[in-house]
Length: 327
Image (cartoon, rainbow, N blue to C red):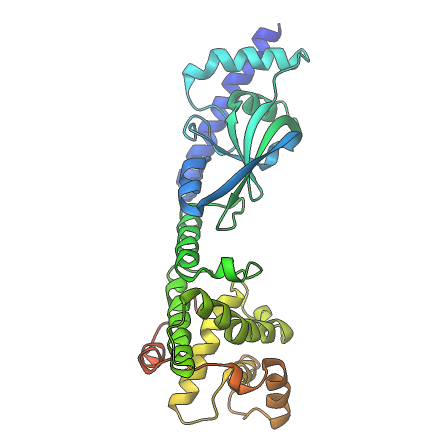
């Protein structure tokens, strides 16, 4: 009887997999299992450690090591040749027989199955909440979340490349620079290079990129990010990040410089604040500027960008000229 039930379970699971795949194609939202190899290449592995035997939430198992095409994103079987092994496990697990723990890699908040794909598939079908697993914790250079689609993996790779060049995570481990669009890490790295250039002029020496990255973070990025948080500017722009607005603020700062208006991070943020409130024609009051400058610190802490970057940043760009933040 249980064998017949196992066969029915397998057929139902395959039909569900087909219907979900068909629906995903029609919606243009195809999301297979995450591939551990692809994620590893994008996010750059830094090390791993064995964390022992744990009960792992099945809902957090979203990836596979070596078999991302054998199951759909919900771990439903997609190939008919998987029937025998799947049905055997289904019958055994329905009888309450003990099955060996699966083996998983844990990256960020996602688990990748190294061994035990069929067990996970059957457990999901039987509505288990957790499953025993031997867990190997993996550290990556770029942070990972459960929503790792192709664009997110590209962004993770861009972040890793940015960290490789800037060494920011080595000199400021607490720094987390997140952007919402591809291509923005290159622009942030240009700011670091500009900062490095003027540090060299001021100090009459060659400045290492890592040293410049630390100084840029302490004296340019973090003060602006603190202001963005203090005045809750992100609440006006859902879906944007502090780094997105940092780029917008620095572009506005340079735009104000070009028009011969008082210019600096505080003035740029004040201009944005007044603009988002619909009062762009009203000049920021000295009191507002004083408060903003108090949070930013004295102007000597900020090193200006070289002229070539000013020309590049003030050239017309979608989303950076006018009243809208980067898209």
